[in-house]
Length: 267
Image (cartoon, rainbow, N blue to C red; front, side, top):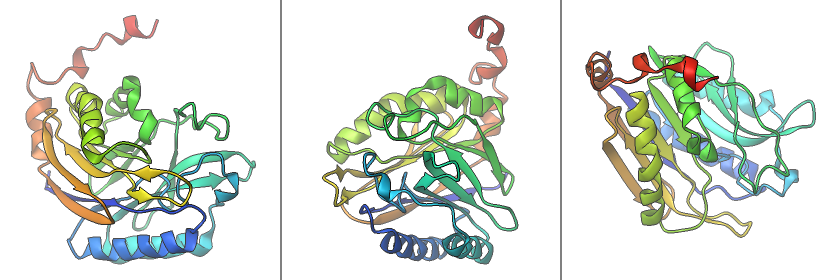
């Protein structure tokens, strides 16, 4: 399998400034495309900003602005992963991440695990999805989702090669966030033999929250493949050697999923 180029975008995402955030997202997509990336990944709720109690921030999925992102995915032959607070036709509110790919309909992942601060306002998603682009199978989790190991395992069992984990995780310094991620995201990568890519919002969001800017790539061996800290909008492209997956998954003592005794665990 060929190398895959993944651009993780650390983005400032003010609340109730959808047009501003969309314009910045479009610019970042174009800039990322100049780095010949295959995937460009934005933080959780980058289009709407993160303020769980402010439901006026929710946005319906609308062809007007979505057509622009579809056009860019087609133009640059890339997958675009971007997030928002979604107001569904049912009037339910979801934390949603959208997937734009050339010649495919828009796909979405709705956050399955809601934090105690989000649960009073959002509805839970209930679909564990794995998507495909350029021969790569990938899953999406959103922030709090990553604390539930079985979700990563479920995606790995559905043949995920990469799990993207966009965050809207406030408080703390980038160094503190880095230490936190390394405690649990390394385990998600190592236990399931998948790449794990995480990225956070950055800076003040006009709603009283401040986000430590960081992106991180972990290899399927559980080792850190790259990390970037930022105090303003910044992107970094990580080059993934996908042959590492085959090396680990054909090793009797480094690939654990085939020996998992699901019949006992799922009783």
